[in-house]
Image (cartoon, rainbow, N blue to C red; front, side, top):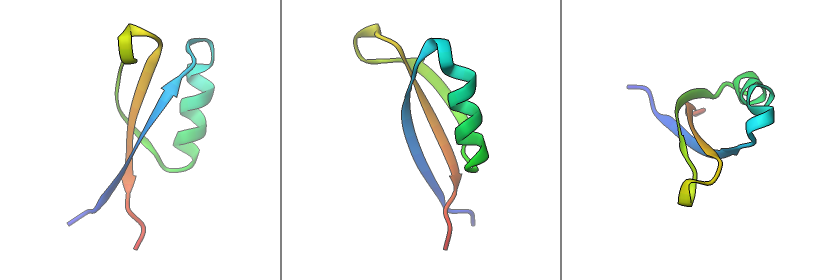
Length: 52
């Protein structure tokens, strides 16, 4: 069974693509984007298979 590790990261609206591209290069898969605390900004939830 695949073991996963997870990451939450704030997203800067004017740099969203660049930020997500960087995480993708590190093997992270975007799961969901939600409003940040208090409705400020965005937060990305990502996952990738756990290494050993």
